[in-house]
Length: 452
Image (cartoon, rainbow, N blue to C red):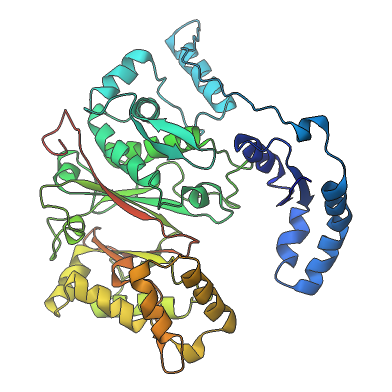
């Protein structure tokens, strides 16, 4: 008897493709109409008619005899070919335009012009790292494509990156393909989540990453092409495409380059962010984090502000947006401009004390927890979604008089110093089904002093 997979019409084709990729070519699926399912699922009475219309098809799929193919499905063999593509034109510009058209039509590019990844340019890119071209960095969701150093280098060429940037790109891909990073969610979710990419340490300065005014804007090759190389690598190796399996309903802001910037360690009153995680001052790192679009705080060049006021505004927002109840998964990336961080430091805040302030001021009294949220927390503890060392804090507080944190530990408030003077403080939040925040050391660089 076959299993039945429920999906919506907007996900149907990719659900079937994913099933075949996982060795389930005979899986039967029943598609629900997306235009009514999503609007109705919050109310059981409204959802019943949607389910009722699909019920007969579900029963039929469950009891109908297996076809010969379903009874003994053939196992598709994936052919990996290494062949150069030859494109000709009446001149170089014409050939380049044909390359761009070919890549876009095959969903290999992002819609902006690319640099044709010729063998010579890929070889030149690979010279930026000691890591072997055949080294497997990891698998890229959702299609679990194998990310090798060479494949990542090809995408870096397409993005217009310099060979010096490749070790940074590789370290970021180490983070994206880490088993604890929920790459499927950021790649395919209907929510407009966008990765945040933060470069830290001496290499950030050596490669001239922007960490000040305009750090999320254009004009800095390192920020722009490193972020774009990652976008292309995740697109091509993870095999995603808008309206196919990247279902961000309004798209992803900064989808071409992600939110890519460096920490301003020179102007920070505290130790570098990566040092606070246990790395050495001479280490260079990349942090990748999933986030919604940033919320802006502070007065910039217009209004007055205080560091304490900025922090308390962020806390007030957290305290009014606790409806998800995903306490085992939430992470926050808080980017403070150097002026704000210095103001807070002058009032006695270290980075750790500031994290503890966020942690304590956002705790939710047990009496304010909804029954559904309590059940979610209990289920998450039972099935291991809480880190074992943190579960007891929540268990001890799920009772009258207790108060539950909105994150698993104080370290889930990630505090970075970057931005202009004057500037705005940024508040990135991610209420995800799994925590998604990784910091990886940059290594293997051959063309720079740092990152070796």
